[in-house]
Image (cartoon, rainbow, N blue to C red):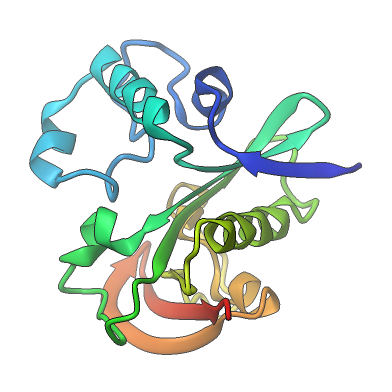
Length: 189
């Protein structure tokens, strides 16, 4: 199996990974950290997908992993300043470097356990580097090897980021699914 990671620019492919099974469902669409919470909480059903389609007109929203022509994985990445992490009180700022945030990794059922999350992390880092990012931050779960509910594993796992060359940069006060999140960073210079 050869996985190709590309900028997430095709709406139907993005929809296949983060859109709902039912078009009227109000799923995340990976908007919760990308837009202000008041706007995120106000949108329902079709509005969410339409909003993502408009955002894609401005450029990629992250990266997608493909197995052939089939999108099988997603990673959200953007400048931290363009996300709610810019104002998040639970996730600290390490310094004033204009870092990019990598906050969501999703692999389609049936494709998990093949290392695609590792491909997505590397692809997201490469995308950020191409856009001029000096560093990438992630805020994964520090689960210490404990099982994590897949619904809440979207933040990624500390071990996966360590394997990708990220280093622990700070603790946070954020907790998901009973596990603390840590701030991991990979410098790109």
